[in-house]
Image (cartoon, rainbow, N blue to C red):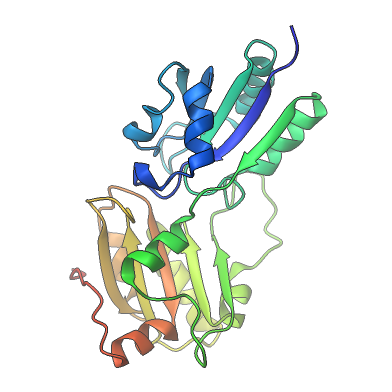
Length: 251
């Protein structure tokens, strides 16, 4: 039997109708789907005839080792024609896609990446505030303070944030105090506008509008879904222009 093909598909930020047309079409003919924990059930339902296997990673919870996921994808390609690795957001941004691509290529398995809407863009769209704005923001950076087990600490994410006009911090809500301390030490203003968006694009979405000095208070909140931290003067400019951001009080 000829080796099958593996598709790394971005499921988008949450809402099931934000998956791409191409991603939905491939799911419809998939034989087996290895999916993240946060993929919406209605998105999974698009793979009507596929076997579905959860291999998600959630902070502070039991998760599937990446090397085991890599092996399962290679093994599945030997048994199925269409194999899907379904990831939240976009596979190529903080999705460990490169490790899977490298493993598949090493095993001579054909692989294709189907992009998805990442959380930063979904949150920006939901707020109605552009991450770039003429005269205010000409640079945007996406970072995460999360460091995996055994990963060397050779990259300082705070340098990139301090150098950018607008920043989006992924997987950082529970580390809000250390994030604020690091950015204040880099010289960012305590009054820098910050918006924390939880579960962007879903009915349960919540927004917390505050400042960098107030950011540590976010760590005390109970987040039911993924949260992105957005920082930059674009949010202050939005207020000045008369655009009111939906607010949720931070205790």
